[in-house]
Length: 301
Image (cartoon, rainbow, N blue to C red; front, side, top):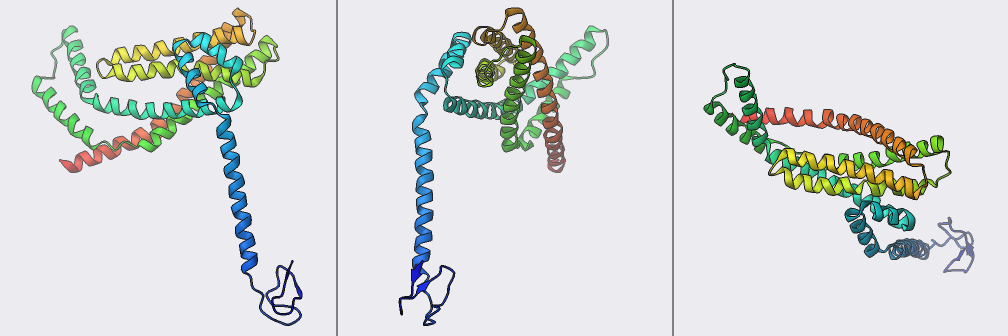
């Protein structure tokens, strides 16, 4: 409620003119009130975000990640027992972002090794033909021409970094949530245990850390040996699955034999789900990359 500056009559908020003297209503006070209200709302929102940030102990989060990476079982059990909601959310986001960055790094590593991969493939094919008693149709000049062609194609490959980052983050989150659902259903139905879903989620989340750690090592090693890099991926997956089984048994109080069965089946079903998801990514992105690259390569000739 405001008052006319000319006659002092009461004026409603929607009135443009004074109902008594007809003077035009000055809207500046109302505008100032609206501005003040919006400023207060922004201030309250900022204070809320600040209070949430103050509740997050980033030093503790770093300690948890370091402990779980170096000691997957003991660090994982400690995480499941003591980690709070805010820390779990932050770690989930951090690990998803790490997977997104690793996806971009992996693609760059593959592109950089494209020449080596192509040359190794054709050399192995030539060796296989000679082993079978057939003359190889590949000569040194052919391999040299192939090397130059691959090098030219590599320079033309349009890598969709944004899509790769988003897809890898999504694949990681899908894997965690799918595995959580299967573990939760397995414990609820087979073990008939009333485990807290949040504890199961923490168990699945922290068990994914070894494979991320080994993936970093795998990418670095792959610059020197692709096969050794693949071995580290397999090693990381095995460590994650074994850690998951032990943490489920110790932290969630599930019988050992039943725990192994639940974790094995859940991991297999999750792997199938991720394969389907990754296949969709391959079909939607890789084909476009190949078509664009071939078109640019054809125009450059």
